[in-house]
Picture 1 (tube, rainbow, N blue to C red):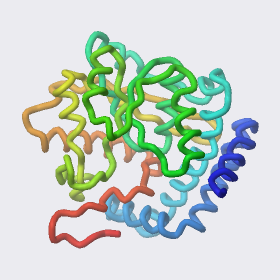
Picture 2: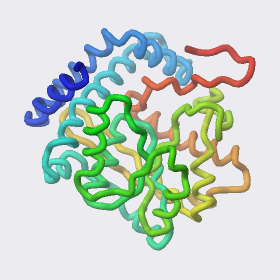
Picture 3: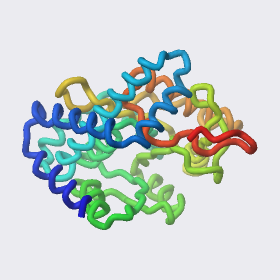
Length: 289
């Protein structure tokens, strides 16, 4: 019931102009900061691990800004799910598409790290281009239906569940569809290795290099930035990685984490700190959370 009420509220709010919707979202984020004690704790632990040089006041300030950015993103999902294609195109602009186009003729992996604008970038792509992606079915049927509709309402993608494995994804890539790939979360020890992320060993899946090798694909990073005020979002493509993958799986994983670190430093309040990025620990190491 609460999920349906929340979705109904987001649906009602999506009729507002962005000049009103953005501050409502930031206000909602501050409410979450006060009420969601566990996620606030996780966020502060993550910031303490990644930015030990910061004072406690700096970490708290960034945590608050993160919840505000997250709240705004959550509320603005209503535009993705129910507004017109024209409004979605106005909300999210694209920069650097030439980096993607330069890889024409080769399978492409669009590396999309977990910043709070992640869905904005993915649905913006789906408003113009056909892509392939992997979908995790949600436990709540109402929420699952809204998410699925949002991701398929414009240009129908090739969408697979995680249980389908990687082979159908590679097959779609070889047909020319870019793979919008989100590999920077803690998925446990399986298919992972411990690689530093801001100097802290983090369980890092090696799928990016393995898929690139299997599909003979080029990696083009695609990062979505939430702009200040009511400026919307920008999906920014970066130059394709050269000499990737290498023969060193650990070096490949470190390269991915190092790239994400650079983007985090550009907008530290927008990385998905709510996630327990350091949940899986090396044997014998004390847990952080």
